[in-house]
Amino acid sequence: MSQDPYELLGVARDADADTIKKAYRKLARQLHPDVNPDEESQERFKQVTAAYEVLSDPQKRAAFDRGGDAFGGFGGQGAGFSFTDIMDAFFGGQGGGGGGGGRGPRPRVRRGQDALIRIEVDLAEAAFGVARELKVDTAVRCTACDGEGAAPGSHPVPCETCRGAGEVAHVQRSFLGEIRTLRPCAACRGFGSVIPDPCRECAGDGRVRSRRTLTVKIPAGVDTGTRVQLSEQGEVGPGGGPAGDLYVEIQVAPHPTFSRHGNDLHCTVSVPMTAGALGTTISLPTLEADLPDVEESGLETAFDLPIPAGTQSGQEVLLRGRGVPGLRGGRGDLIVNIAVETPTRLDPRQEELLRELAAIRGEEQPTGDVRPAHKSVFGRLRDAFTTH
Image (cartoon, rainbow, N blue to C red):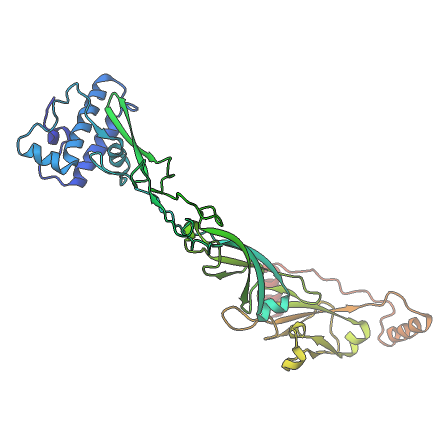
């Protein structure tokens, strides 16, 4: 078998690092013992891995290019290489090459989590906006240690086990040779430093839980499910890190008069049969009437809704611009559904008057106007041609 690492990987002598890595990745996937367990493939895998170790290390590659024996007689001897090299070649990771470092210490200071609370508001508050005071229980920065986690007068010190690296190397022998893996340091939990004298208030976490009061401004036009974001008002992170965001989710309470559909309001007004026939005017409250101090503000609390003579039950009256303001401007409409009520109980005099009215109108024995609920497309076309 060739002892030239360039030939083993099938790359040119002026190949760059990415080309070498891609070539090794392709061969390693083909020859890995999990894919080809036969002895020839295992031996071939050892050789291409050793070749990659040479060409991925600038110093070893330069030594070989000058005519040196970079392999050191790997045929039968276990070549020493880092397991992170194989992972880097397989998955394109950032593990150190040639036995280099790994991820390094993880930061002690990290961003906090976002928080979510839900509040219920009235329909008028959701429509026109409101400011609410909220009591929230979240993690805040520890004032005793200013988030550092160490008792006043002390500071974190480098870990003696990993010497500040946050990880330690473990070496294991296998058919590939010595495999070197990096694991988080158990002594410092991967931070690279330890706190010899933790703060008594936060136990070294850099944050404590506290209840505080916030004011949230709910914009006009919100609806159930709308979330208002308060930046950096969530949980403070470990080590006194920056706070996450606080989200306030809106739940709109049902209204006794109006129902909301998008930015439109709907309501039903019931009138007696005589009012539907003769026409009338009724007073309808506005949504603004539910706002506090509405009288001092001069807002309209009610308006007159005319009911034309001959109004039928189920007829709708559209009042533009009396709905809910939109989050991006404009305002919806108010749709009033008229329900004409037929009396269910009549005294003798009322029954006499109605029979007299029916006689005058020729309605003592009405036959009823029976017609289909709706016509098909072909039926409407037929009627159109018949009419013309």
